[in-house]
Image (cartoon, rainbow, N blue to C red; front, top):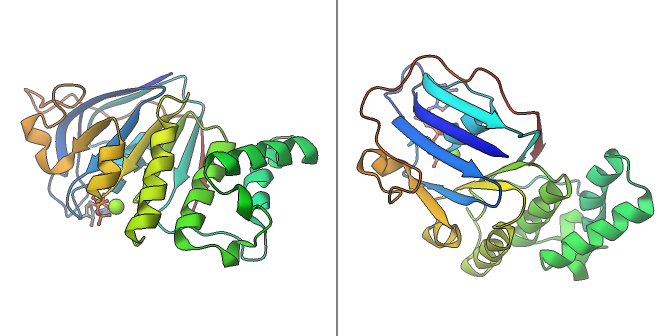
Length: 232
Ligand SMILES: Nc1ncnc2c1ncn2[C@@H]1O[C@H](COP(=O)(O)OP(=O)(O)OP(=O)(O)O)[C@@H](O)[C@H]1O
Ligand SMILES: [Mg+2]
């Protein structure tokens, strides 16, 4: 399973080029951070990786990516539902029995440090707990590609550190995880960082991001990944 971005450039009507000649090779187990100032195109790059936007130039090739999960910046759960239900419901939707779904949900909550909160309603969770719950919920869907936008924005340092811990645990799983973040500590939790502020300078240390010699190829993504699931 692999996602390759080849000499990708993108701009919207009314914006300049957000990035140009981006080449990036993502494989299962990768945990990649996207950094850069506000407006530099982090969320846009997530949309390109999800296949929601087509790049202005260059190609994105999804190889064996059947499902994509999103965790948006502001977690949005169902206030009266328990934490356990939030993680169990996607498993039920995929056909698990209630018992099997609950068992897997409990294991996921435990992995994310939330096992003591299984029966707590969503409305009673703190912001950091809700963020981790949404990551647990996204993992319950076992996406091939997990896109996480600003997971620690608006969290206090302790809650942000807990989210960073969880992200660190996602590395080396069978999922490709891409995290857009302003937070240097979150970026440090990733094993590779693409800085969109410095796309021209090979900030990725040559491990994936490089400057294109030319303006990139023509055309956009020919296809897309499989289903895209959203976990707000
Ligand atoms: N659909 C769109 N149409 C036109 N312009 C857009 C569209 N989506 C994003 N933009 C513009 O593209 C630029 C990059 O936006 P993007 O949301 O990717 O930035 P970002 O790096 O995620 O910023 P932030 O850190 O504030 O979340 C911004 O100037 C934004 O206004
Ligand atoms: Mg953004």
